[in-house]
Image 1 (tube, helix red, strand yellow):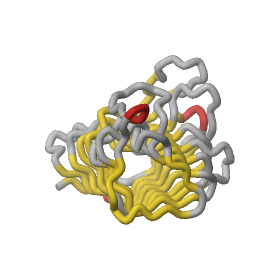
Image 2 (cartoon, one colour):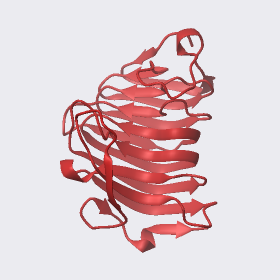
Image 3 (spheres, one colour):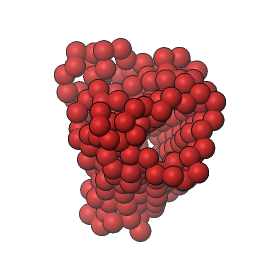
Image 4 (cartoon, helix red, strand yellow):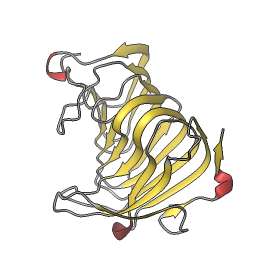
Length: 218
């Protein structure tokens, strides 16, 4: 694809493989890359395989559903969620992603992202609430029934000072014998563009919501 595919309503890719070329040909970590798919508020994208290079993957401008979407080699981010309403709901159900040097799911907007029945391997962060966006929101993520294969760094990163929450259950982690993957990390977010400070990790019942029984190591 040389130009972003705009989706409103529902788009079924029939498990065809899409990848960028020309202006969408980047696979690096440059910010502000264009996505392969841009979803309008309420849109559904399903049965799509994103190959390499995948530029900036999928952008959701409001509530969206990503169903059975697979990222073979994540570029900058697999998907970015940009809705500005606290009532925005984003659902990633089924599918999987691998080879994400940095983030898989980037939450720049407001609302709640649910990641369910998903697999991720070889990644930096599965989910990150933007730590230094110009406009900050309270954000929430629910991670349920997700299979994780290392190496990886962090499952969920949230900004405690903006009231973010990460709720995790049914997570299975393989390939991490040293337990190097941080399940949930808390940051002090900002609007200055500076790298946010890490202020803690692990379950605290407030921002990082999970129990030891919700994480299984294989």
